[in-house]
Length: 271
Image (cartoon, rainbow, N blue to C red; front, side, top):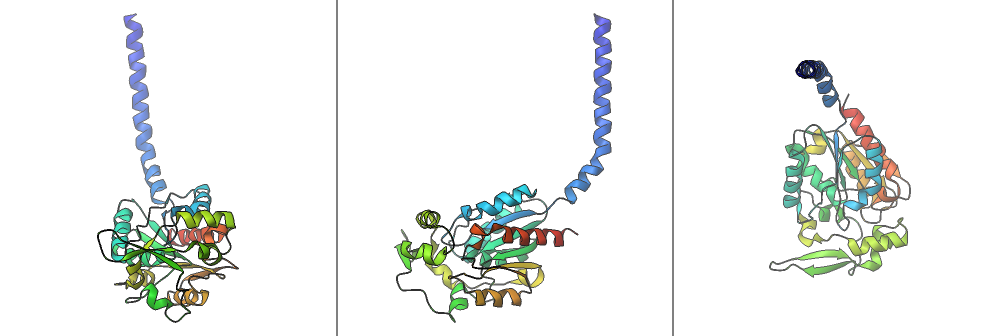
């Protein structure tokens, strides 16, 4: 019995030794695998939506082997929202691609230059402001929204208001190519934007001036005019894709176009 235990002990030690040798041998391969991994994708939703607007994009990216994050955008103003996103990005090891929709484009434009692991930007029907520009100033050359487009809700304990899109405009304007039953739910679950954010000017925008960028234009966007999107995309020297008839959140009904842009950004930054 004692002899059997001794033999078993020797076998166990031999197995452990072999395992340790194998782990040492595999270590360089593991390091190579980690360094050649695809960048993490951080999806930043815009105003009057939430992270569920990325659902179809997330599913396709995960199928393609990407690690994906879709943190909440607090919609409290450019300074606060960019600081929150910057803290989130810092928690991610390795390279990151930031993807912004609508107002989220302003947020990623401000965050990107301060975070060394951000390697590319992807805009989807988004603002890509230059220094000193705001959503309000960029839209000022275009016809204004109807006076009853937004429903203001006063902020508790502080001046100002949150803005919601009136339900009667949400489907026909904001999500014009989304089936009515879905857009009706989106209207009910929309996240408000603090009204002052429309006038928030970008303090700096080195991001799209120094990083490669991609831009998806919804040609049927009734919120950010396609002509304005094209101006911003060309100014940023972005790689441009079009979604014929795509509404403001074009990635909901046409997720593949956004995924193609993200995959192109990943391929270009991991060569």
